[in-house]
Amino acid sequence: MKQRQEMADDQSRSWFRISRTQYFAIILVIGGVFFIYSIREITPDWNPKKWMENQSSNLWIILERQKQKIISLHSVVNDNSSTHPRTNNMTSAPEVKTETAAVAPHVSPGPYLVEYPYEYHFIINEPQKCEREKPFVVLMVPVAPNNRRDRDIIRSTWGNDRVVQGKVVTLFFLLGLQTGPGAEQVQQQMLQESNKHHDLIQSNFVDCYKNLTIKTMVILEWLTAHCSGASYAMKIDSDMFLNVHNLVNMLLNAQKTNYMTGLVMGWGTVVRDPSSKWYVPSDIYAPAFYPVYALGLGYIMSLDLPKKLTEASRHVKALYIEDVYLGMLMHHLGISPTYSPSGDYFHVFPLAYNRCLFSRIVATTTHPSTNRVDIWKDFKKSGPC
Image 1 (cartoon, helix red, strand yellow):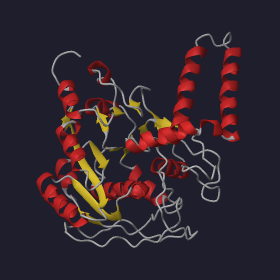
Image 2 (cartoon, rainbow, N blue to C red; image 1 turned 60 degrees about the vertical axis):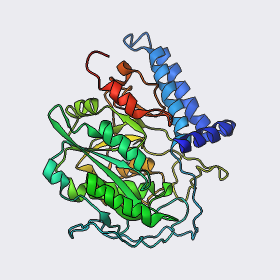
Image 3 (tube, rainbow, N blue to C red; image 1 turned 45 degrees about the vertical axis):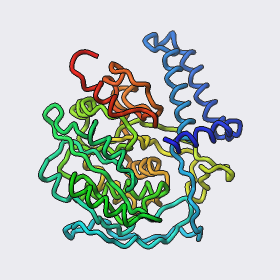
Image 4 (cartoon, rainbow, N blue to C red; image 1 turned 90 degrees about the horizontal axis):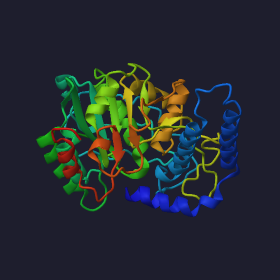
């Protein structure tokens, strides 16, 4: 949430530096509004005012998107190379827990790409859990190794909803390797935590914000290797509130294959200003707009997609913006994300808690000061909202 706020502050200072491409996009939207007004007599069932309100909101979120998800670049060696190993990421050998593992060698492809595909391995694993529990939906939470607090909050709130409408829901946390002072102590603590809760999956990449694309792709690898029998998986951030009942209810009526949904966005403008921390040069990504994608705060996919997406990654350079990269992979596959049944299901900006309001959503971000345990206790009380 702190990084989201920093991005918001930075974007507000750069409002007047909107590119000509963005002006063109806005003009197109406004032109579309006037066109619809011009034909309102022909199609009286349309509500142009409501349409304009919806599109204005969508355009605002698109612009806001630029301040939400682009990563503050880490200091890395830019060797101007976009070549990295193209190896098979699916390991067939049985996974075992171990206390030590070498960090995958760092061969930097520059500040805008990450080392994927690569031969990453699982060093803490629960390879049989899906087979035992046979979940309908799997919740995958990417989280930092030293962030025990968020893991415990999730375990005591929405992560504890294990059977909903007769459907099994299984929770996992996906982590990389802690680096720096105290890393060995953190690793020992995670091994103890794993032995207690059996919900940690750790891989041997460096766990940092720039590597979120790697973390996401490793999630997909793990789902393919160890949980392909489930129907759906949801990747959800650790600072979210999740209404598991509404999630399951939505998925009971969802398509079974080639399905990805969440807060689906289009017209995401590629920033070309070299002074912006969101800059992506045209030699990395040439189009002016990103493909349609689901925001990374929380998206759901059918379990046929992980294998397809990891295979597509061998043909699409791994951009460090993880949700955009998944959109690029979906575009490569010729599959479009699906808009959720309700525009109120997913919220990128924190909603103020209201029991009735939260009973109608699927997921929302939360403010850092929010007591998520108290909210959950109130939310789960019996009786009408």
